[in-house]
Length: 136
Image (cartoon, rainbow, N blue to C red; front, side, top):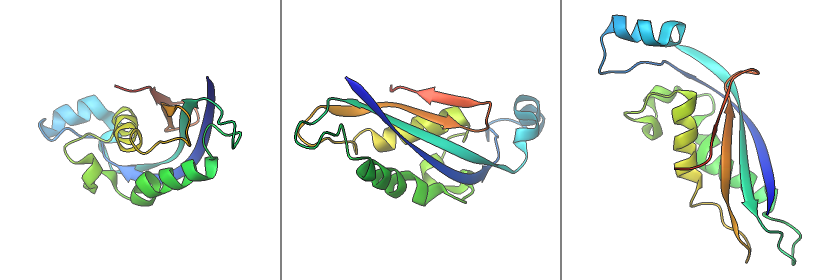
């Protein structure tokens, strides 16, 4: 198997809060993140597969870029995550964001006559903090 990765960048804002908790509980759990704020995220989508002998690709990265933009980035870049349908009833933490992105992308990834599948999603919230998700 070989792994390929596409890296993308987007910016968005959110507020971390659990609507089932009182204000003071949210402040205690989320601290400063309970306030409206934003991040400049880096997203890495990694696929696992075999090289297609016809193309030499696991998947054409231009196609993967189009999928990521169409399915995720065009919907979240410069948006307030708490108001988006994809995060309805979900606290938009970096952990939850990676799981939502996984669900969106897992059935969109298809190879050309070869075995290719979504391997992992890494989401960098800051230069020092990131989450990696490898499926359910």
